Amino acid sequence: MKRIFIFIFSISILLQQGNAQINGQDGKLLAPTPPMGWMSWNFFADKINEKDLMEMADAMLSSGMAKAGYNYIFIDDGWQGGRDNKNNMIADPQKFPSGIKALSKYMHDRGLKLGIYSDAAQLTCAGYTASLGFEEQDAKTFASWDIDYLKYDYCHAHEDSNTAKIRYKAMADALRKTGRDIIFGICEWGERQPWKWAAQTGGQLWRTTHDVRDKWKKRPTESWGLGILDILDTNAGLNEYAGPGHWNDADMLIAGLYGKKGPSGDGGGTGCTDVEYQSQFSLWAMMNSPLYATNDLRSMNEATKHILLNEEIIALNQDPLGKQAERKINNDSINVFVKPLANGDVAVAVLNRSENPQSITINFSTLGLTEKYAIRDLWLHQKSASGNKWKGVVAPHETKVFRLIKQSK
Ligand code: GLA
Image (tube, rainbow, N blue to C red):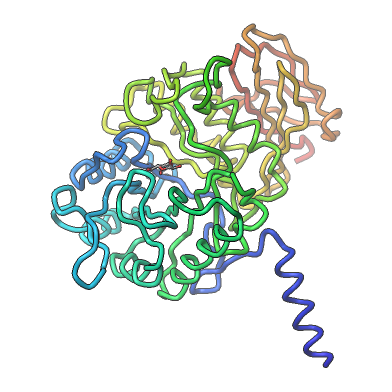
């Protein structure tokens, strides 16, 4: 009787915990830090092929991105060629003549990993074959191709939360059953508050909003199309739900797209300035969002490299403590974020949301940071002040990021 009680008690505790973690086959946490890489969707849409993806992998290595921590190539929607006569999913033979297994070998040979995409319905968002009813078979196929990550979308599926939980759990269980560690990215766009249940169903991360577009903010005249600020304003309040092995996913980085091409150009995505791209990168890193670039890595300009390769900012995102920044000051002109780090340092980000430069003084003690610090500017890569305050000008839409190092150290 007592044992049954304890069993029921533990199950109910588990169910209440929004952030139950899934471990890999070796018992270690899957996705202990947010995944980093390059995702095909916003640049190519479904016009992908193995040659372009291999070139993107080569560029990830030659540009220094792999060294900076980006190690996934994520194939998004559009790779599918239907099912064979045994209902096994196959890749489009025109786009992937060598097959997906050969592509993952290409990645693994270079120290990279490969992600793939499917959907919890019969068809994906772009109308390709998806996995509903074939979860175990498809998970086995992905494992046999040595896939390392699955992004699982929710187009064409029933809207209610229960169905979503059941369908996501079915695929998460199927992935675990394969015996291969495949990270599971849930993508139902935050519609059913996945931060409350996605980790329990077996996801290591979950999108919190609809798709990012290449813009700063949705304009009052636009009925859809989220920009950087719109996503920030949803994702920032969800810090309590994130931690090692379970992350809020704020969607792709748009740095380097410049409004040129792909789905990010829909819904008013006319492009951003480098200052805005730099802000997105800073804020996504502070919020522990996965860092997925989606620009053409083969032809990045210096400004984009300067953003995506800032290793001091990346270190905040990959910090082992895994604490998503808390937005401590939130008004129409200024936002201030605070993120504790594993070694006792603290990261502070200051965003100017307004259209004018602002002279700002931050007294760190008002943020609960009462020590004396060496204040390192992570974009200038130098110490910019010491003590307990920072004073300076923040340009419109700019984000300053500081690492506060206790001076007694
Ligand atoms: C949805 C997702 C996007 C992308 C497309 C592919 O819109 O949110 O990130 O995967 O589907 O069709």
